[in-house]
Length: 256
Image: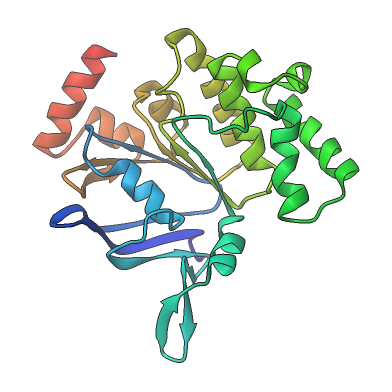
């Protein structure tokens, strides 16, 4: 079966500093892949390259066999136009560390914006679908609140509903709980656990090791811009093969 997402020899450099140094990975439909590692290891850059928010320096990303951000012209790949890339990105929802909600729009208005403007869905249908999504993430009773009236956890759950509103094939999460107060982390993780149980394909950059252990099908440990070790959570967390993995886990698991 063709993987939903395939990454081949992905590289990304900022000037002379190479952040990603040849990443190979694949994600099958319905799988949850968690990426862990120290700060500066390239995790967030990798996630941003997956949907071409950062243009890779080399290598390629494929979504259901189609190159992301590129299109074939004859035998060569060329950069997509902005509109082509925007259409392709609709298939990959992304939730950031910050919430990035429109401050002048309510939770409901934030969720219906893209389906109406980008997909041309009728407002009544968009509202019905958005309310169902807000209910799914436990935010139905806050649908008419503005972001300033919501806690960080409530804003992040609204951001998740907003991404789901585009009905993506794949959800990308870039440390979605890192900006939250500790007491609010659980409500966002509970929403993500529910999505995983429902079969949503997810790639999650996280420092929440308990979530990675309990929810991930595949766990990747990155350091220095490369994948040092990968496998099931049990394999990586309980029997790491590499010294760098063991050193990282001994620190974060004790701190956790």
